[in-house]
Length: 194
Image (cartoon, rainbow, N blue to C red; front, side, top):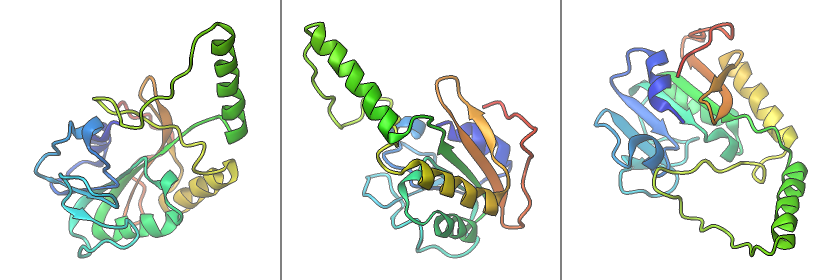
């Protein structure tokens, strides 16, 4: 996910909270800039604080901007997470994966591939769960159902306005940028170049 591209859209962000930053390998090459405050529920050496995104031990308006990049599909309470991000930052940028396969479609798709490999005499060996250098984007079919994804997108839209479509070439998703003033920073008709 291109956090740097979304930061350009956010404008002046001298102090940034990257909520749900994970290992920071993919975006920050494992070394976030000094103005980026990394937060995650899991421990990583580069974290400023280890915390649940719904209850951050941070003062209100401590940051110019907060990033919620590819994390809302992993949380149970999307609205609480967004409200907490808006409490600690004036503006937030959100990305949510736009995956078109349902859980059942994904199972059939991959079962078909495995059958083909078996027929061709190729042995299947599952990949290690450790991400490769440069990071990987994990598909999210097994975390939430189609109904849960729809509910998440509706909740985010209620709080932050209509989504824009993000297109990074190999990745497509929904994005939102909103502020504590309740004003949306751009409309869906604008196509950001990231």
